[in-house]
Image 1 (spheres, rainbow, N blue to C red):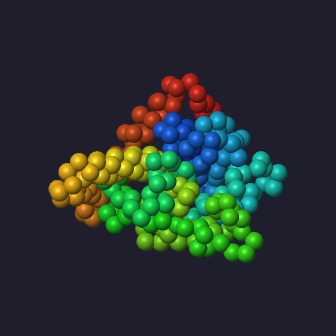
Image 2: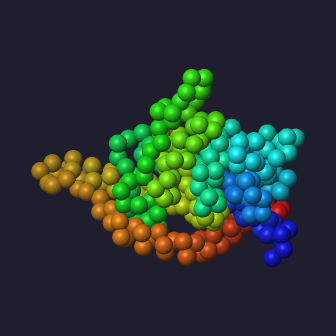
Image 3: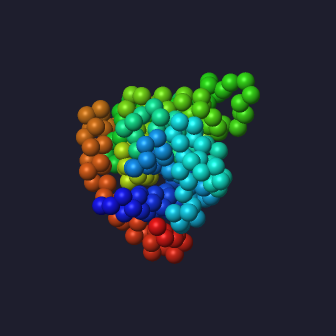
Length: 264
């Protein structure tokens, strides 16, 4: 594949991925996807500051320096305030090639409660058996930082990036949402979708357990049978090699919906 064809394939996957995230309800007007540039060292790519569903052209994409999250072209369209989420992850983790940031309603309760989000079923083995870590931005704020929960600068982004040092794929963000990382756009998008599904499943299971306990107060408390460490790892491996199947379905769904345009 020639260099122009290669970068065009990334553009197309990026735009499809942004549309999929919206179609699956993982992002709305807010949230974003990025990828490490496959040809330009030290560069990553995001869209300009628009809703993911409305990204449609290569001209909607902006190239940024990983070193400081500034655009290569100073005349580029304005970008997202939280692009340091992406730049600092790429800076710290050379093996990460794509990042998704979401404000999923299903996931946020696990960012503000003491109940850990854990892998409940085989499609979310990447969440692990021990519980997804939670980044509390308040612990890293410095004098002069806005307290609006947004990751607006390098030191806040670096603090978040460190949460991926143990090789986990997802980090929750208190009162904000979650960030997931992958070695490809497809993998990061898949993990974002199934993180949301897992959160909904876990909430339903916890609700059933609480209802059961209230109806039979003398019965032993119900508990969720989460995936074991071995099950979670095997399931995570499975989703990696099978990720092409949902991707083909999801791209067909967004193509058929009539809402999304991909002219890359």
